Every structure is written in C-alpha cells, then in structure tokens.
Amino acid sequence: MKIAMVFDGLGWGGIERVGIDYCKLMLELGHEVDVYNLNPSLNAMEVEISSLCNVNHIVFTQLMSPEVYSYGTKRWWWGKYAYPLCYICISIFDFIYRAFYRNSKVQYDIAIAFSGHFPDLTFITKDFIKSKKKLCWLHGALYKYIIMTQGYLNLYTKIKNLVVLVSDGEEEVFHYNKWLHLNITKLYNPTFIAQRIVHQQKVLELREKYGNFILMVARFSYPHKDHRTVIDAIKILNEQYQRDINVVFVGNGESEDTMKTYAQHQGIASKIVFAGAQRDVQDYYAASHMLVHASVAGEGLPTVMIEAMAYGKPVVATDSKVGPREILGNDEFGLLCKIKDPYDMAEKINKLLSSELLYKHYVMQGYLRINSFKPETIKTQLDKLLITTMDIA
Image 1 (cartoon, rainbow, N blue to C red):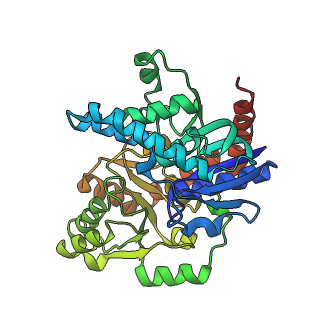
Image 2 (cartoon, rainbow, N blue to C red):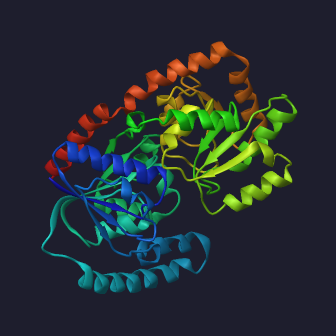
C-alpha cells in the first residue's frame, strides 16, 4: 500500500515519536510511506524518520481548520451565530489554498491523520491529498475529544475509521449518539526504546552527577503535564521523609521557565534538574532509579511509562484519565497517585524507596506489562488494521 502519515508538527514529543515508530512498522510490512509535516517550524524529530520515507512540508495551521471555531458555540452566546459564517469563510479559503497545493498525480491507499489535531484531521478530510481511505489516531479515548468540542465529532464522521488507545466511555458515546457510525480499533503504541544503544559511560556520569535520581520525561505544557506537583513532591520527600533525592526533568516547552522560577520560590531548586530535550533519552532511563509521570488533563497512553518499564524502572503516575490506569491497572504494574496531590505522590515514591522487595516486584511486573507493547505484537495488529480499513465499503 501507499500510505500518507500526516503530522501537526514533528517537534520533540511522545505523539511524534510514536508516529515515527509506526512509519517504521509500515515500512517493515512492505508499504510505501510518505510523511507530511503541517507545521514545518517544528521539525526536530524529522532526523528520526527513515530515509525510505519522503518528507513533505506544507503550512496548515489550526486557524485554517473550520471546525476549530466550533469552540465559540460553547464559550460565547453569539458563538452559534458566528460559527456558520466562520465555517463558510475558512472553507472557501481552504478550497482556494488546496487548488494551489494539491498534487493530483499522487494517490494514496490510506491517508492517516496521526497527530489527531484539527490541522491534520482537516487536511485529510478536505482532500489536500488524494486517498482511497482515511484513518485517524486518537491519542486517548473517544469521549475525551468529543466533550471538548463538536468539531472533533464532525471530522470523525467524515473520516469514519478511528484508532483509539483506550475504549473507556465508548458505550456511553454511542448510546447517546445513536446516529453515529464509526469503525473503531483499539491499538496500543509500540515501543522501540529497548533497541537503542545505551551509552554506559553516560549512564555512569549521570549517576555520579545526580545520584539515585527520579526521572520525568515530558514536555513542559500544563495541564497536560504537571511538573509543579512533582516539584512539590520532591520538596516533601526531602523535608518530611528526609530523602536526599533529586528529580531530573527531560523535555522542554512553554512552561519550563515558569517551573524553574517555581522551584526557586519553593527553595528546592538544588534538587531539580532541568536537562532539556535529549535525543539519547535511553541513557537517562538506564541511569534513573524510577520514573514519575504527572498530568492534570486527560492522558492518552503515556509512552514514557512503557519505555521506563523496558529499562526495569518502576513507575509512579497520577491517575489522570485514562492512560496511566490503562497501563498500570489498579496498582498492578505500578503505583497510581491522586491528581495534583504532592503528598500522595511523595508517599508512593517513598514506598518504593523504603522497600527493596516492593521495588523489585514492580520491576518484574513492568517487564510483564511491556509484552503488550512490543513492536512484533503491534505490527501484527497494525497489518490487520490496514487490510481491514481498505476492505471497508
């Protein structure tokens, strides 16, 4: 098959990394893959894309997506009157823009909106690239998207074929929207992290520099990632539990400077390391003692949790909807803590620090859990998904 993978930017991030992993699996299955980056300024991860893939740049922003303006119908009383006008005007603009861009000579079997954002969803529904079938990824559960805005549901009904990471709330969605007909497949993200080369010298240097440190790998983007609660938990661990332990934040983002200032104000800055974005993140996993993951808003399926387990690191994560519990179960494969509760997080971390037996238990449980996310497992399911999508009338 000839497949188009469409991204709303390819900066450093979990969605982008997973998408590139899927490109690799598709190539292994014998498909031809083209990549479209709709936000060319975000291109840091393009170096990770196989040279067998053609990478195309075209600017297509959120403001060029008519459905994004449906937010206004919920926020302002006049939004329901303005939305139809905005929709018509932006649709006309897109029609003209497409006339200048579209390459009618290239036709794909399947066009995939992988980021699951308004730009890539609109890009394929407006046929900026020709395809026989359309498919989109939801990085979480269906209900999470449709409660945000009607715009997502409008686009899903045009695409029809959806991939979700978790199926929570699906029954309720279809019960209250009986007219809705979607083809939904639940598919976990693969992780290739264990195949990366670990640089032992770098691991030793990190351990010597930061000691027995806790790791968090995430963008600085509140409320999607909650570094503030982690900072507070480290303060509690140091002051109330007398744990002389550091946390290393790997990642960057718009709220990074705010978090640096917050750590200073809390008097805990000496225990907080801002390492920035790192290409060799496997070295940090290998050097760390455990992973912590925190979010306030809904989560998809946090790949970093699976990656940490692959390196034998226990996980403490906030019980944000719905991904962390999908991975960890009811504390079966890791420890869940309350959202925005640094005391509960500190308590769970301290449990792992206090009991070598419990620590080893979760190391072994993590190894068991990652079997569901191994590339070989996901590749078989992906192959079936692509064939089924093409066969749907």
